[in-house]
Length: 147
Image (cartoon, rainbow, N blue to C red):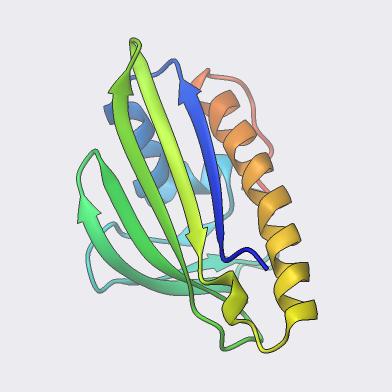
């Protein structure tokens, strides 16, 4: 069972724009999911479901190294398993190279659940990267659970 899921994507946008898109509550809510988020160490964030009052995913901001690295825990509602999401940005080829890692997935209570979660996260992060690309390009993006 793999424990770390890694995604990499090059955006044709300046690093400051990508950083803002992944750290500012209003922008995250436009391309990803409605959220309560601040890129401050110790802040307890939440990603909200369609009715805006039920936490779907939550966690705590662990590390903020502006414009290069953001790390937070990721806890799916209804579970107690803590995984970690790391966003790393670097200026490259006139744009920004994003490396996203989601680790700790093997910590789910049994292998069947861990495999299911790994597959869910894998597909979810692919869609996330695609939506972020569209958002940064100025295209209309339908957030995962509305705006």
